[in-house]
Every structure is written in C-alpha cells, then in structure tokens.
Length: 135
Ligand SMILES: *[C@@H]1O[C@H](CO)[C@@H](O)[C@H](O)[C@H]1NC(C)=O
Image (cartoon, rainbow, N blue to C red):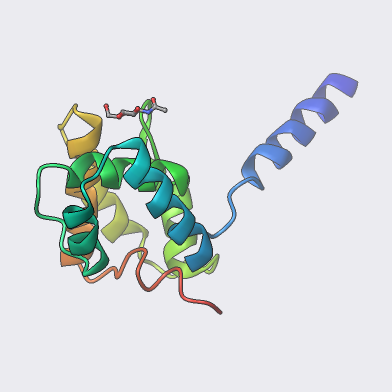
C-alpha cells in the first residue's frame, strides 16, 4: 500500500511538472539557444522576424523546443505538453492536428523538431508565438 501511494505521488508530481511557457521563458531560451548553438548575429535577426530559413535554424528550433519541454531528443515531440502549451491548459480538439505534425520518420533530432515546427506554422496552430502571449 505504501509503495502504491509512493508511486501514485510520483506520477502526480511528474505529470504536474509541465508549466505553460510564457513569453519571458521564450525570450530567455532564445538567448540561451543562440549562445549554445553559436548562431550568427545575422541569423538571430532573421529569427526575430520569424524567418527560419538558414542552416542553423533546425538545431536552434530543436534547442528552443527542448527548453520549453515540448521536445525530447529521446522521445521526440511531447504531445501532451504541446497541446497544453497551445491551448493554455484547456485542450480543445487540436490534439489531432498536433499529432499529425509530430508524426515523422525523420531520425535527426534537429530536422525532426524543425519539420514539426514548420508543420505547426502551416497548420495555423500559431505555435509558440501566440501561445506564449500573456493571459
Ligand atoms: C539533442 O540533439 C541535438 C541535435 O543532435 C543536440 O544538438 C543537443 O545537444 C541534444 N541535446 C541533448 C540534451 O541531448
């Protein structure tokens, strides 16, 4: 019984871990990821305009998504967290669209994160940009 309660408590703690990320969080991750990935200043200017077209973009996106707890190199996209982030904790039927974008045969983690990101943008999921708006 004690073991059961301990496991249950652990699950509760684990699943409560994800916090919807704010624009302050994103701002912080952008700076960290630019540094960690040695992103040239010129690319950063493009990213600020939401243009992710150069060769550095994929790993930068991978980094931002990992820091936002929306992606994990081992398991790929964290769909539950994505849905929570996109809906501010109020899931409203976008899960199917999210899953469609996260299904991939891509094995490279940068490309995998990047392709999902591009798909979210095309699917008008307004990922990140809108989802981090202050409530
Ligand atoms: C995740 O994968 C990317 C791309 O291979 C790599 O740059 C990054 O360091 C990895 N991060 C972790 C925490 O494994």
